[in-house]
Amino acid sequence: MGLGLTCSAVPGLSSSCLPDPLPSESWRSNTNHSDFDAFADKVTGFVGSRPLLHEWPACRTALLDDLPREKPWVLSLPGISCLAVGGDSDDAIPVAAAWTALRKAAHLLDAVQDRDDVTITGFDTPAKIINLATGMIFAAYHFLDCVQTHPGSARQVIAVFSEAAFCSSLGQHQGLDQAHGDLPLGEALAAYWRSVISKSGSLFRMATAGGAVAGAGSAHLVTSLGDYGNCLGVILQVIDDCRDVLRHPDTADYEVSLPLLLLLLTTHKGPSRHQVTRLLSPGACRERQALFEVLHRANVPAIITDVLLEWRRRALDSLKSLEHPSVVQMLEGILDHVLTDLPSTG
Image (cartoon, rainbow, N blue to C red; front, side, top):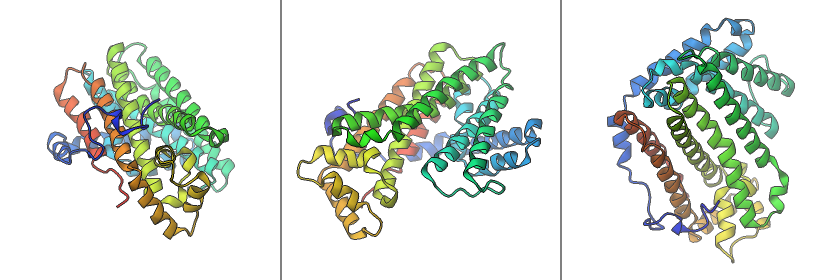
């Protein structure tokens, strides 16, 4: 993967360009947010009504408590994708419920791996949290069995979810591989992209491709919307990585952080890996301010902007075969909404 190595990665864009803030206006004017809220409410109702979850009330409560924290547009991605292929968004409600359960399970497993504190009533040990996550994974596949758009639709959506979930797990494994830190920087950056595309890209591909299958979309449209979800997932992960380093550096890990990998790649006189580790250590606030200044001098924020805009271009390219302009505008608006909140070191 060559993304992020130079500012010239995006033809026609200057190294100082930023996404035009105007798309956020387009997002507000072209998108009916009440539709997102209504869809999110239907997903919550669907999850709450499943008889299987009543057998394990604590698991049901954990899922239902998490749903209001979801951004409605995120939860609505399967429904929007279903609309994009000419389907009814309600046909994607089980897909959205399953996607939410799988992402919640992945979050819990991540927290256990990272030894983060997790506060869920009734689940006070890592073993219980792992078991809860396992239950949510199987609940997700139970939800998918409710997809009844056409004969075989549930099986097809399950196939999409299984493949994407496996790829996401692979990406997580790649990110956990400690051999990463001993790689030459160029190889470390390539490994970073493999991990992010597999882990985060596949997770969002699951939502958009799954929603398209629920809407009885053609194989070509399912692939196109899956590609859109993949690009959106990568964009969101890169932005999260930037926030971790630039706003909350105590939690950053330079070995898997795009800003710091780029810093080490783009300056021969910049800090060494050892120095970066020291700059990110707890209590190194003055040193971290120095790191921010080094990032700016190395032009890293501008490089990342170019990278994000390249992934946006790829996402937009994936929408060219769609035939519903209003839905295309909605999906374009989501991209621009995400990119109006670019992190800053200022």
